[in-house]
Length: 262
Image (spheres, rainbow, N blue to C red):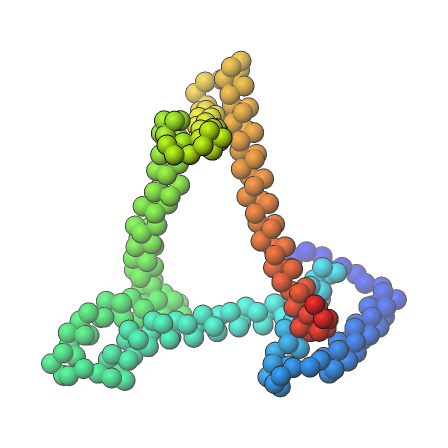
């Protein structure tokens, strides 16, 4: 069920239209007076500034300009991905060796035999466009998912499980280097102790065969604290990444579009 549309009064619509026209005039004035070494550079700055401001207009409310910019962003991203696929995969692996610069006739069949399976799987993916033969694409998707799982699972297990276990089960005195100072060795041992306590308490929190009361309840509560710290750090890292993107856009608007001297 679609969300009900927001009703806008005629007065508010008139005020918004007036503000939009004023902002558009100001944008055009600033875009005309900016200085750039080349015309292409000026056009790029104007388009970048305009799309940035249109994207951030969603902070006020949803509007047609934001929808246009959103669809344009998705379309450009898909087009860029298609070009990369052509230049990095299809052209060097299939088109160039078999069509543009084919080998000697005797070696052609060997080159084709090496590439025939990927070509067939790629053609099977295109059957997704047909309702009648879309079921053929499942074979290609099955191999892709299986190959991805076979490659990804060992990497994830090594990075997130085995490395974590190695840090948790090693002796505490092994964290300190032999040539390190007293304080450096002490901090290394303290860090190893924190990792050990966090691993044990978090695992105990997810151990539901024993009721969390008494000492067990205290241990599980410590595990909850470690989980909250971990979730908070992950959320803070995500927010920091988004804020860094915002800072980059603001710097672009100030120094390149408005050309405020640094």
